[in-house]
Image 1 (cartoon, helix red, strand yellow):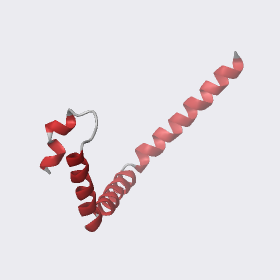
Image 2 (cartoon, one colour; image 1 turned 60 degrees about the vertical axis):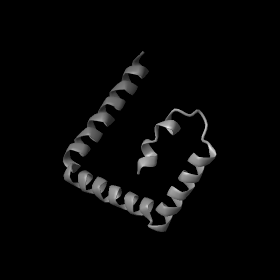
Image 3 (cartoon, one colour; image 1 turned 90 degrees about the vertical axis):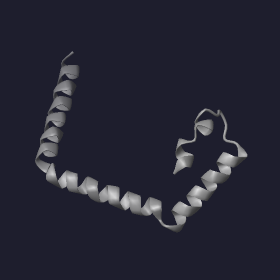
Image 4 (cartoon, rainbow, N blue to C red; image 1 turned 90 degrees about the horizontal axis):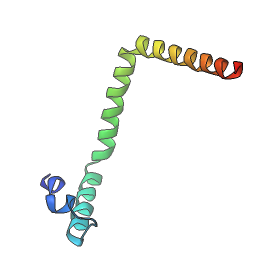
Length: 79
């Protein structure tokens, strides 16, 4: 919305009455249409898809990180 880009609010150090009223109205609308719930569900679905598609790369990164931590702990103990 245009309120999101309102310069007078981005430059303010504290929210005024008008800005607060707009924010309350915005959140009321978002609750009414379940905007946040739908957004979170959609983002979660995309994240799960990326995780599934990248499972091999992520598992390799996990294994390497575990080895780095093990090597670091051994180096610390050897001091």
